[in-house]
Amino acid sequence: MDQTVRARLITIAAKKEKAAVVYQNIQVIDVMTRETYQADVAVDSGYIVAVGEGYEGVETIDGTGKFIAPSFIDGHVHIESSMVTPSEYEQAILPLGVTTIIADPHEIANVKGAEGLQFMLDDAEGLSLDVRMMLPSCVPATSFEHAGASLDAKALEPFVNHQGVHGLGEVMDYPAVERADADMLKKIEQIEAAGKLVDGHAAGLGVRELNIYGVAGIRTDHESVSKEEAIARARRGLYVEVREGSAARNLREVLDAVTESNASRFLFCTDDKHLDDTLREGTIDYNIRYAIRHGIKRETAYAMASLHAANAYQLHDRGAIVPGRRADYVILSDANQVVIDEVFVKGESVARNGKTTVSSEKTPVPATLRGELKTKPITDRLFELSLEEPKAHVIGIIPKSIVTEHLILDVPLQDGKFVPVPEQDLLKIAVIERHHATDFSAVGIVKGFKMKRGAIAATVAHDSHNLVIVGTSDAEMKLAAERLVKAGGGVIAVNGTEVLAELPLEIAGLMTSRPFQEVGDTLEALNDALDVLEADRSFNPYLTMSFLCLPVIPNLKLTDSGLFDVKTFQHISVQA
Image (cartoon, rainbow, N blue to C red; front, side):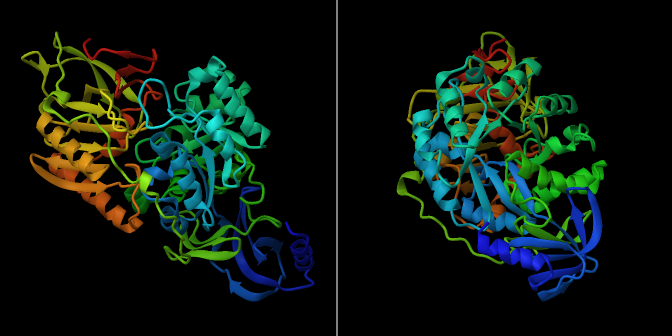
């Protein structure tokens, strides 16, 4: 804090001068003591100056019937999953009370490497939304698939001291940590030397592995899917990020682990959330509402949305309505339902009544980031799946989860080839390498989409983001793939020879420069297409499909190199 500013704030706190703004008789949601009480709150020079009685302001606002709480921090989010750029994402989430995010741009980094990372940093710079970028730790995510780029410790080194970089992103390559891989340890070392933090990704890890994570310097995890997993992580010093995204919805199970004794180790995140879900239900505000309904004390829920995240990421200048903290706060008319009237960053209004009050300056998108899919020719044979026996390893969908089941099922064959059988919920899934036009592609069987006809496809396919297609026939899968190749990437739904809905994603096949409202409307059209296909709407099929390629999340996945058993960390045959 500038000393001139500090001297002024001391004078105001001593009641010798008026503050810029005083909220009188407002209900303060105190995340420090987890209580709500009535007081006056003085704000000046971008800081909370005083909480008490008898303060005067140049502007006085009657806070009767209103609440003031610290604005929200999303502890782990991939902006690319919103399918818009950071500057456009700001416009979508500021009205929801989120003013700080810990963002990991490893999606675009896996496609475009350092160039993609630089674009995200450039576009996030100067926004009202405080975007704290975590350098992607695993590009490529694993050696079991083919990404568009590679970022080793040396490639990341020029970014380590960038003012927009807050640490090292989720370390999902656990085997590299356990074998003390030199490059992985170098990434951690150079981040720690800069006084920055290391994020974790402990999907499916037990106590032994968590101990290894701890000594490696990893301090957070967002992959808990049960009460038991969450408690195990908290006991070993990890901050547990309670996740509710579009595909991975873990609030209900993980909130069972939260008590008043251990709550300080828990915070909220969204990880991957589509823009349509964000606009329909919210992000961190949704998590607060859910937590309160779940039985979490209201003030504790708000603390998880602010103070605990600030502590986890050493953002000690914000996260509470106390003197000396940044004036990042929300004014609410209903604290239990998280009805937000106005949002402030450093004491300045940035959103009011669901609309932003600030504009974003957008960074021009380099031509080299604009989509061109480089795939091998999309032929009929590419989608064939030959089996010698009618028994196969099948990916089983678990609704609202990115974890899958490893099923072994009897499957029908025609002339020695698997043909999708929608009546039995047995569909075909294909993954095609789309970065370097290699010969890598694979076909598998998936159960759980309940799609009766058509196909869906996307170039959003975590984490290497190859072209993924799920369908009821080879012809429809081929059409969907061809359309996305022509568009340079995106998300699509087809039925027969008809394109039902399509969202082109011209930036690396992951994002678009279009306004967030337009993107939200197109995503809703894609959702409506699912009704035509008679797919299961109890979860998000597009986002679920995108995680079926991720070989670091249990149990069975499909990469461009083939079917992958996450438990044994090796590729296996579809034939059982």
